[in-house]
Length: 258
Ligand code: DGL
Image (cartoon, rainbow, N blue to C red; front, top):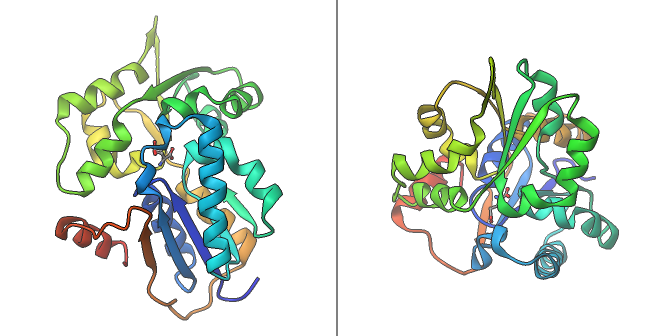
């Protein structure tokens, strides 16, 4: 591990920014390469065998191009499918992003927890395994959203989705059972915290929203150590589509330090 470290951030699009901003706070001295595979967005719609090949190929290229100390797969849809194979194929250490079922269930008082992710993530065997291991007596409702990731991309590009459209994606997370009701929602797609304020506003009642990004940033510190005082070089962002960000998106990216 070099110090300061050189870190790859990978997602299907801009959702990984929600993980990136926490990691930069923890290690402002590191060198960051953000890679968005927007040419194949959304990952939630890609058949499993195809997605594994895609992620191994793209991440493998990035590993060949940059001298990396760490790769963060800032995408639940990719991590729940390809993390084991990435670790088996490449020497660089990987940190994945997987549904935060353990902390969500540990903190729920009503014992009614919803996991909101892409349709692919909530259907994965990996996710079922987390529930078997960590549900801790909670009723866990899996909610696959077809549109929220795209709504988050649109929001950053200056085309926000309507309240009705977002509320419809959220509605299945909110369940009542006699005197009990859902009190915790795990955000199992890195795009969703981009819509954080709108999710809170449109929720039928207040709940705790679990965003795993701070925990991932702590894991980065565990693996790379404490930051030095020096600020790192400017982060770079690459889109596999080769697109040039619109002025609106460029402005949003500048706020993240690109
Ligand atoms: N950001 C991604 C995730 O955490 C996925 C969105 C998609 O490409 O479908 O699952």
